[in-house]
Image (cartoon, rainbow, N blue to C red; front, side, top):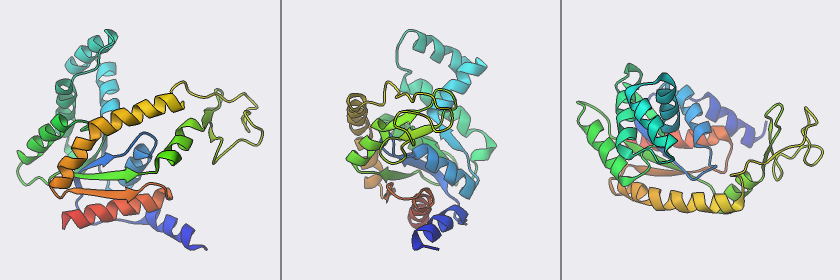
Length: 238
């Protein structure tokens, strides 16, 4: 067995005795935050909290905040920070967050980070937020995003650079013509990266200045990245 495979298996099978507390996962579009959040859920047994999921769930259930959010979105406007904060606050009241939670997509701005820190600090014996950034080279991210193709029938996802179909443009399973999402273009990717950098840099600087920030290499096997995140959290929690 190669050292590469052993490292991957160790990452998937590891356990952590550290109480993780609130963990903020940062990373540009395409770095795999959602994938890593799911790995960390298995390791720590704490929930993943995605603001996108919260928004959709509140709208679907017709909650008071969901109804307000739906009206705002129907007008083509962005849901304000105050409403997102309220949804997060309600979610953090659930008992499954007692030992920690993994934040994906929140806080996106310095204002949200200040709000979150204040809310966490107000709870007795709570651990402070730790931010971990998953880093991947810009050109590698560009290939990940712009190389994606999916089958409209079985939804299998390919990448023309690293996981191409046997026949170019054709799904191996269904034989259907593969499609590219409208937002998986270089122009859209550049704009998303610009927006991410502008919004997130103050958040990164904020947690770095507090000594509660770490970076991990995101261009590695899934289990190895997860192991790096766990090690970073354990180090920062000491």
